[in-house]
Length: 382
Image (cartoon, rainbow, N blue to C red):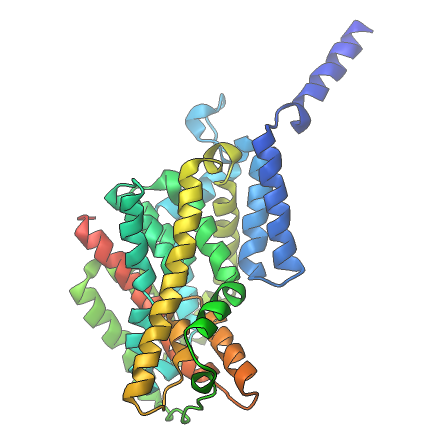
């Protein structure tokens, strides 16, 4: 009987109930909240579901992301190997290829001034960078944190890996993806606070039709120009434009379908679960994480503000032909930010259709965030 009792006792003590900390339970609750937001509210479910589930798993079984050197058999946890692909910047670059294959740059080509709105929305990145320095982060950590302001999760992960900020990658990625999913909640109050009802009602002229030749040349020209100026952007901008060239060339439909569907979703699963698994209670529940979450929110808010304010200036300079709401789409949460511009504009005037106009700054923001990341890499000699 003593053998049976000892065996049962050993089994009982191997359950998670005897090994979890209060912090683990808190993170499990957070994971469930994220799952609720993703499933019940539809907030970026493709991102939040794998992230939240990875968060859930690692706080029940921390060894799922354990380093091989810390395991008795020399074999790391499942998510450890997924996470290495994040650190090596492989998954973020592949995500960009998929985004490129799904993106129509036509609105940006038809209205090149959108590049300026996309650039203005990067204001949050630089504001957050200096605030992070003020709060005690070193230059590389501040740069990695500030990219959250671009509302671009893959770029945040890419830069954190390149700058050697692996310990901060989890909180940075979770903050970036969380704010991406909360775009419909965060942006509208800022947009409404800095625009008048009259400005929100402005109807913009229909965009011109973009030729097939223009669409084919665009990814080639952008790659040459941007990567010649900032070679460090090649992994992101290059993959983004390669995916887009697949789409627009019309001669590699199989590659387009693979990049935008099967490959994209596989990469999202690997990246999302590994990012979520980096948020163990031990790694996530600390003062640095709280600072990152606050800085990320401020960065995102200032990015929205910067885009809207330049939109207001363009509105005045154009004699009221540009609706400033499209400036908020300059953050690179594609296409969520553009949809928010459409929604806020439609609330002021149900007959107003801003979506295609907002897509220009939106896709420009993707390029702009990659350029900002490349700039930081160049500054720190990476």
